[in-house]
Length: 365
Image (cartoon, rainbow, N blue to C red; front, side, top):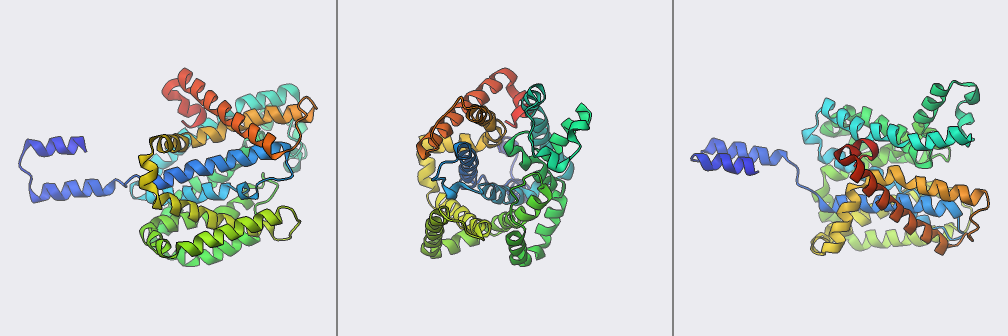
């Protein structure tokens, strides 16, 4: 904008100039604070559920489970929102730079630990029965393509499918016909549920496809959807609250369709979070402490994703060998969550201080 203003100041503005300036401004999407804030909340969901999974307390907040659904919805939203500037080569280059390269590099410590201590993920033989007969380079490739070397890393092979298919998603969005079939894709997600065998990333791709498309749909029609929600918000909040309460009840029982229930719960919760962040956006942004920290969390979301399980791997190892004998309580799990966040902030700060701008190649930030 400063460049545009300087240019205009040098000579009289014509009608053509005004049109060009308006076009240039229109091409740059406005920054959506409430979506960025929602991304901050989504990454906290992901970190938290992994922390509670270490001790496995009797009261494990079911509201935190399947937090990836929130993250995928927001990813689809932001993808569509920024699609006006889409360039295939630039898009893929950025994903390699900010996601794939950090994935390769941030994996090196845990891979070194696994091979040095022979503490391999036993599930790797489910995919590659002859894994232990492979050469070292082949074993490394096996880990990288499955993400089985660290619990959260299953997500990277899966999301890479979405990155590769970005031109297809751009076409579908501009054609818009795909949005008429959203109910079909949602039914598909209810049938092909998120497998506990996370290395089956082709199934995860199918499961999360509807939520990614829902995010794209919500972005394209966000003004209309938010205005409708503003009229019907008691219904949305009421349904969300009901599903949260039911989730707490179901968490104490074995029910057959828990995956389908969590899918529906997260869709309601996701839109409730986005609506409330949108509704109270001005108040949130006026609160310097809250807005600053939400923005920071959003900016470092992928860095948090990449580093947070290193601390949990260490805690899990101490728990397995009996060194750490913490009772599986909600309080102790919360302590681990807070400690993990502090570890992440410290680790990110250290990496940033040492690597500078090159830190984005290590942790995506």
